Length: 280
Ligand code: KIV
Image 1 (tube, rainbow, N blue to C red):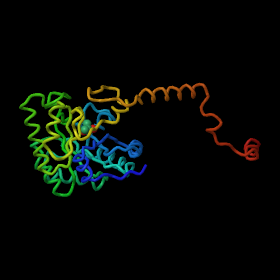
Image 2: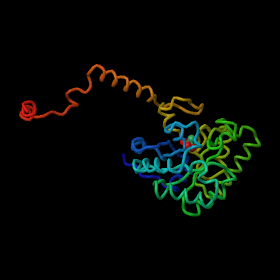
Image 3: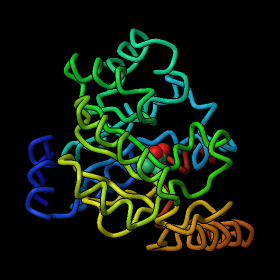
Image 4: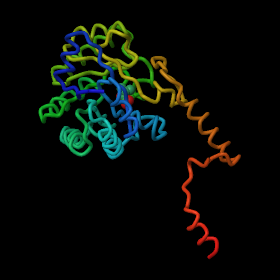
């Protein structure tokens, strides 16, 4: 497939023309290669890796080193897809200086094209300074998993008018600070529609309805690879978890019955060599 990596201007043009933007997470080389072979516009190396790959209960324990390790693997596989990497919890909150250094690492060391961070007015100055350094930033509002405890858990957000107004104000602040795009997670579809209309940067929804400029899903959710829980906003496009278990059970059975490996999976020796071996 002849696919060109998108740039920031392409993404903004897609919003202007009403062409929807597709995004999915990936955390390793093999999945990055698979995603790269589809028309997917963007890959997010999300800190959701903490839950779906590393087995933590939340995204909070994810470190900069985790993000760099996984983003490097994804960048090696995704040659034609725009890669956004999450700044993990506490990598951008302590100081703007530290945020800038960590954002820079995700581009320079790991090969990301842009970074994403969570929050509204409290991170606006940080976003401004990262963008001033030439690093594209994607914002993230609504359900922000890094601070889910403060939000009362992994729950939908901004369902009353006051909270919705505050979210809209945050979206505008992030746009003014130079964010190139904004993830809206688990908010009412009507609010996402208003935000999408009121800001000129693309909104990427996850549990934010169909009016966003694009959509993002966690790949393990979309492919049925994460069984612990399925958020309401997830659509399963495949049930690979079941396929994986069926395939592995089949493998176990063939090993137990001596049916694997078959002759076509074996190497052989020439007869003279075998004779020499057997006759000592
Ligand atoms: O970490 C992640 O995968 C995310 C998406 C849910 C947007 O932030």
